[in-house]
Length: 100
Image 1 (tube, rainbow, N blue to C red):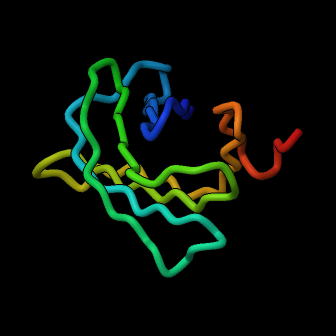
Image 2 (cartoon, rainbow, N blue to C red):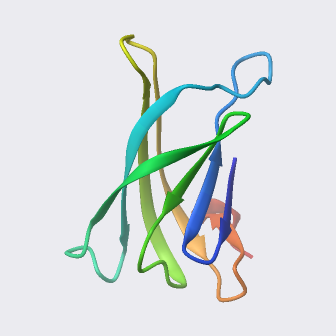
């Protein structure tokens, strides 16, 4: 699940029982489809309860590709998220397939 406020996206990672997955570190690669050459790579920040913040400096309305790779330290456990999202002018964040 993702939510977006300003230049920050919050991604929630849950296990098969619906509990938030903690202690993950990772990065996010993001780019606007009209500015593919301006790829931004940023670190994730844990907010607790399985929520991870991603601050993208130039997050503007339009279609974005957002790829997140999270891994638990010293393990092979990984969570990979790679999806096209539409960021609306009103701040709504929709999967490309869910566009209004």
